[in-house]
Amino acid sequence: MIFLFILCLDFSMGLRCYCSPCHEKDFNNTCLAPPNSMCFAVIRMVNENGERIHELAYGCLPGFEGGTTMQCQISLVPHSTPTAIECCDDRDRCNEETVPSQYTGPQNMTQVALLLSLVVCFAVLVITATIFYLRFRKRDQDRENMLQDIEKKGILIPHDETLSDMIDQSSGSGSGLPLLVQRTIAKQIQLVKSIGKGRYGEVYKAKWRGENVAVKIFLTTEEASWFRETELYQTVLLRHDNILGFIAADIKGTGSWTQLFLITDYHDNGSLYDYLTENTLDCHDMLLMSHSIACGLSHLHNEIFGTRGKPAIAHRDIKTKNILVKRDGSCCIADLGLAVKYVSETNEVDVATNTRQGTKRYMPPEVLDESINVYSFDAYRQGDMYSFGLCVWELAKRTIIGGVVEEQVIPYQDLVPSDPSFEDMKVVVCDNKQRPDISERWMQDDIMKVVTKVMTECWSGNPAGRLTSLRVKKTLAKLEEILQATEKIERLKAIQP
Image (cartoon, rainbow, N blue to C red; front, side, top):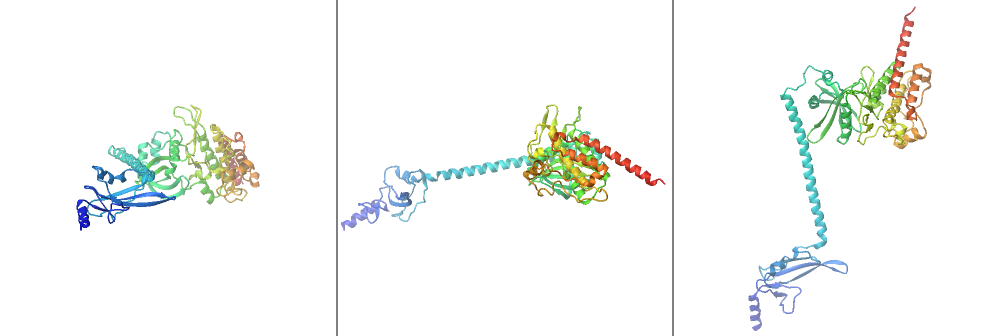
């Protein structure tokens, strides 16, 4: 009876908590919590024989003043031994079924820091992307506002004027239409069909107020090429019959992406490469095309001095796919994305900063073996003449001589793969010093014999020994005169009794 009385008295004095491990004074796996104290359950992670195990403990918190609350928040403080604790005081043995949430301790602080870093980086990325998006939207909005102002102020294109009329009425610099009109045209372009695709982007036949134009849409990764070509086309006095006519340039935002437009004259016959695939030539056609290409190169290569002069320009990617055939059978040079300018005032060569390279098949030997003097503008002009010589060879292959014509081929077609590497071309052009084959039939024709001499001197292995574009232009012009005179004499003979 006394024992039961003491036990009842003991239970009435405070909270009974489940204990493990228990002390000697504890009774029936319980301990007596001091007044205003609590029961606790604690879990710790300890190393035992190299293995990490969880250790549970239960009991009563000591009842010193102000200590209970702090002890129950022990899991908020890093410990050398990872620890978590939970407390309760709502009923006896309230801690018996409690298993504290695991606290992983200081070894996970690195993971927390990493997680926070990732969150911060992601937030910065989102903010940066938002800023760029808003800037592009603002630029497009500003352009729309400008166009609206143009319309309000009456700066509109008369409906009875053609592209040629407007270009002729502009500054005469050869830089296309006035800039405000360029912006208006770019918004009104209607794409008709794709007519070509390359590494820079895609070319479309398009319509503007009933007139055919060509639109080259650059990939966004080729922005440097677009900027360079636009810059060069807007060079003072660049406009020439044998340079592709520039009309306008613009950046057109469609909301989800940006399109880089370059709008030029459209030529139905397409590139010289495509034209030679489907057509054969006579000597007159071949000389007309060769001479017109030489005229375009000569205009590019030579500086025009004066207040409104033109700098000397080298193309660096002359090939039959970058030459277009006009309706009259003459040619014009296109694609100035790799061109370089010579600034005579400072004696500097302005080389494009884009990463594009020329076409390996048409590269001169000094570029393939990296012996070219990149600081000499003459070196770039001489490289153009090598490529020009290969184009003349392609023209000669499709010219009817003695009633015979050959299939279209491209330079070194039988010597290198369809997509040759630098090393492939270097072995053939530099190491073996090979050049395209010369047909015996060409040497039996007076005109073709001179043309053959021109092309072989153009692709000479010695850059300094190559003909200049001006010299080639004069030679081919003289050949045209001789051919016309010869044909006239033959016609006169034919009508004489």
